[in-house]
Image (tube, rainbow, N blue to C red; front, top):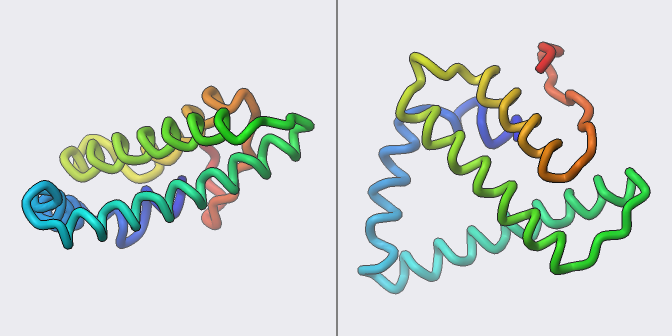
Amino acid sequence: MTASLSGPVADPRMLSLWATFISQIHVDPTFSVEHRAGYLAFRDAIETLIGQALAADGRNAGAEEIKRLAIAVNAVIDGLWIEGGLSAAEIDEDLQIAIGLKSVEALLGIELPDVRQDGKAS
């Protein structure tokens, strides 16, 4: 969550670049293939992290449940990233991360540790 909503990734200019890219995925098959590959790689990484988090909590979730949770977590990240890019003056990085972590906790039904390097509480 922190990596996806902070630093250079969270620069509002990245949203403009992404919007230009995403507008082409239904027009240019090359963009579509690249988007799909990137999406699936990111979702696979999220699935791995979710599986590990649930296992650490003593839960053995099936592949389909983990996939659904990964799609939901990705949607939370995307939504916060877009909102932050459009409303950087109203929604700062710390608020985005705190909302993201609490949303993921609610989706997964677990409490996540605050792993941000700055030590700011969420």
